Length: 397
Image 1 (cartoon, rainbow, N blue to C red):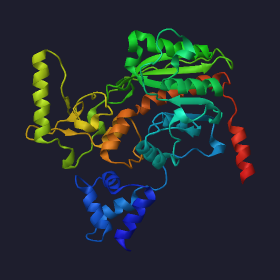
Image 2 (spheres, rainbow, N blue to C red):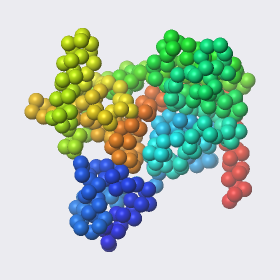
Image 3 (tube, helix red, strand yellow):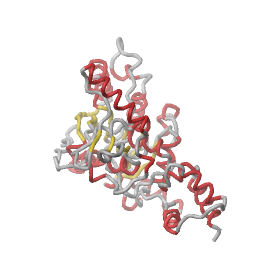
Image 4 (cartoon, rainbow, N blue to C red):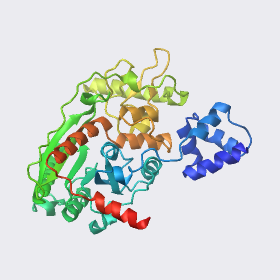
């Protein structure tokens, strides 16, 4: 076998750059150079490295379920890497449409679900969205551009939330789940959330709103997010939904840590000195800002953010008195959000940090999804959109 040719062809089939494939394989600080030499036939990977390349998945681990097993349909807006989709798909959800504008997130989504999300949702007409049972959206929180004189639905125009609202208004899904940062509650002295609520009430949906913390659901991360669940009153105004009760199971940072990590994740002396200097400066000013170091015994970490790739300051792992602390690896970030081990990370470390920082704590969403589907099934709430899909598939065969 021509090993170099095999590696290059596989990488191209995956649609990855040398940097992305090297990071995905865990090849270390200069892994792209190593991969380039392999592809050019200058050196060869070890048997263990070649085995890792051969076993890197080309088939998506989380495709839509077979239609005969599907129980309801979903659309996945502002999809990111599919973190909200995964729990609903586990319960039998069949995704009929997804949207995500970021090309790197699209790459991760395609590697895991076998489909490339449509692009910018602001450029997609609501009539072109397929009928669906449940709308999912972890939408960005933008300042509302028309705050003030107008009210309700009209007040949301010009924001990304409006794109959710116009789709709900047109497609009338049975239910929806929206996710955002906890600060949405207090943004603009609470007026932003009030506008969102009034818009959704105007569209005739019953709302349930709660802030839940990942660490209360078995995830070793102090991540708080607001969740907005809505049910279509025109189908049934009495859906017996309640947010899940926290499990409060003990958590431990050590549960997500790898036994050995590459030296590239240890922060440099220069960066560490900068962290220490800034922390001392904040201390003198009387505030608590600065980097945070955790050990395997820590119950949970700070919230993982999209800026983690910059310096890792919010979550650094202690490596003892004689070594600088280190950043989490992308796989550890995936675990910190509760992603399954089979989840493919086909992008560079920098993009992976952004993607997991922007995503959701899977176990929290799973707990909400369980309650939503149970409540909807209790009152025969789900509109039948699966049968037409099955019939259409039979016609195509």
